Length: 196
Image 1: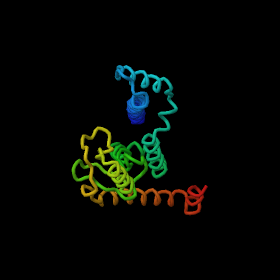
Image 2: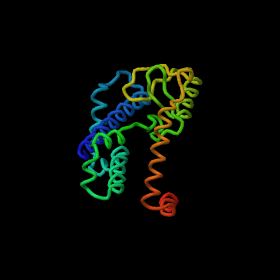
Image 3: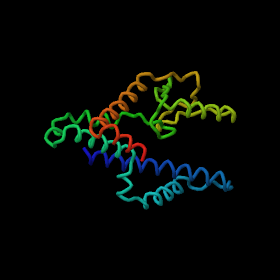
Image 4: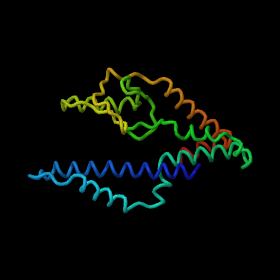
């Protein structure tokens, strides 16, 4: 299971590098304003290759979702105190918990007030998406859904509804984390971990 998560982290890093290469190429073209548009595919590939050449395995260990997965496994091991019991836990539960997406595609932080887009179904942190909508409105431009791969190109504030189910799931998971932390380390130790 850990190998699968590392593979996911590698794909995530590769996708981020590709997106960054495209963004840098677009910015370069805007900045330089050449008379003849160069081979964009070649420029993107060069930038992508340069970014990929800096990769190391330690980068994968620092991937946010991989670290969350490892934390979930660590908590489960603490809870059951032996390897036999952990092996009896349904692997799907661990995968589902680690893959539930509580992370806002804009802020890359866990959402506190998630809102769902009625048109495409994606969720975002309310303040973050509203700020983008406001900024783009001032620029008289449409807002594209910030979720990678989404084709929705006109996100409006009126399309957003509070995602109460996701909010409850996030709150429940955080409550469970606190409960597990309190049980395993005691209140004083939990406070110490958070404060220091």
